Image (cartoon, rainbow, N blue to C red; front, side, top):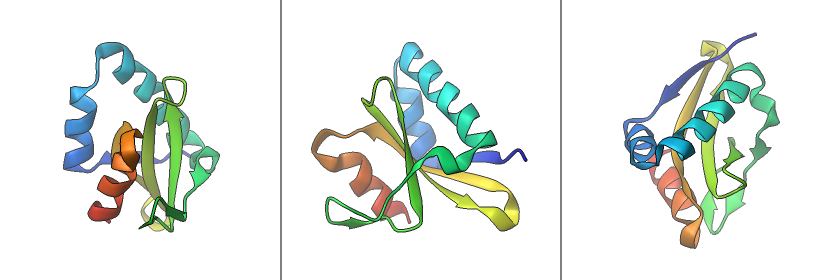
Length: 98
């Protein structure tokens, strides 16, 4: 099964701010997610943010996190946030967008 990847507007903006090299690494991970979304690690309460139902995948040697949800009924994976872990910002952003 192949899932469609949909980026939230904010996640798309975060992606555009990455360097070309970082973007390529993120795209490689998005391709993996589209065919096997269960590969991402399940998130629960992360740094005080309730991200139940979300998963994360790393890119660029764990420097970048991709936070996403899987919507089986629509065969869609929604990318909620993309960014570095600095002070848990990527998780804070993801929690606000849920």
